[in-house]
Image 1 (cartoon, helix red, strand yellow):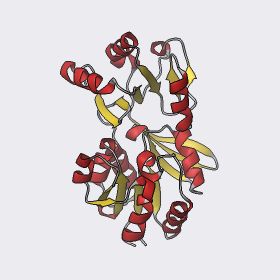
Image 2: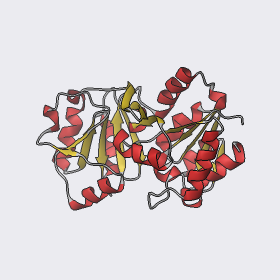
Image 3: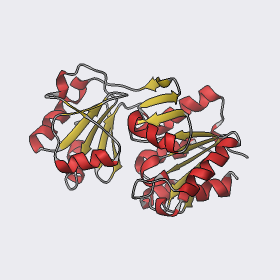
Length: 265
């Protein structure tokens, strides 16, 4: 087997649109793992909502979470922070003022916890779908904690927000990415899945040529570019598919399983 590490995005890639793993995909991932391949989930999710997916796969190991801002190792002893790219709350105050004024839902994350100031039934359903249990606080600005991700969630306002923030450079020296149709993430400029995967590969003494990465969105591009083989699932935007080395079936048609069978087994 050529590849020693397989990096997998979770939502829209590994999971289908019902946020489910198929039994055949689980069996195929376990088979390639049993042959000595590292399986690394690389996701925008927090560790707490990634760990259940790792558990469904029957695996332990290292997870790249928060779109690369926090790398966490999980085993029977618990979760250990391996690496994080953090920033401070004062650095996002202009953006916090904006979303509060416009009434746009947001959350802020440390490596292990998520904080919100308000929540509606619609947002509650979204968090439940992603296995997230955010902590409700009066004012996130009073937390005085290092933050790894600031996320906006909206059905119809994010195109305008993205355009205005780009024009005004409201995010300053931080990095703003569209991590999904309904999400904008602001993180450290160093934080992306590619940098996190690069650091992990170096610690495992694995060459990029020995890595296969599969994703579906723009926040996966750095990870796919770093890997020796970067694969997009069919449901990816055209720009992501064009940047990939190969395209596999959609997340609803077991694209991850198809790619592993084709390139690894």
